[in-house]
Length: 139
Image (tube, rainbow, N blue to C red; front, top):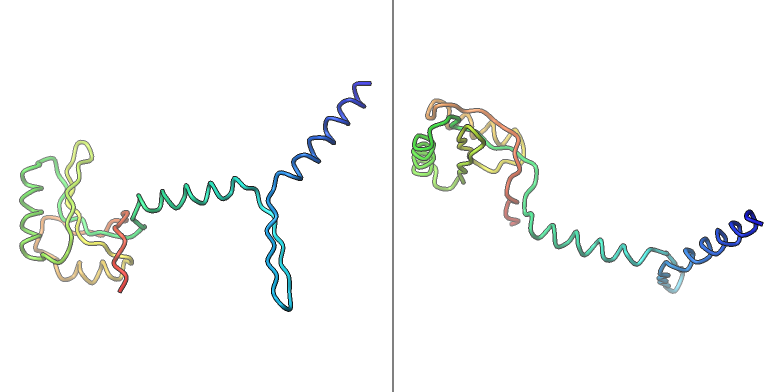
């Protein structure tokens, strides 16, 4: 008796979930396309769109020009860099126990190396680090 009852319940669940999806049909003069998807997928897509609007960054590279525990020195290095290269963005971050000054928003190591050669010897430390960078403007 239990097996019959479980079989009926299982069949009911399977049939019921088959109707839970939304059918979308598109037809053209020479072809027809029908695809089925869960309605929750639309909600997930909208949530992802909102998250993408909040997080405007991609994986890329920056050049780290200072690394140390002295906040004043880090600020001085950042201001010195901003004075010499006003068109290149600079970022001062704190990762306990150190302050870091990173510059640029480079999409490839090639771009970063090119700029690294330009600033070599002008700052305490110069090396390329992977980082999340701001999305570059689309021209």
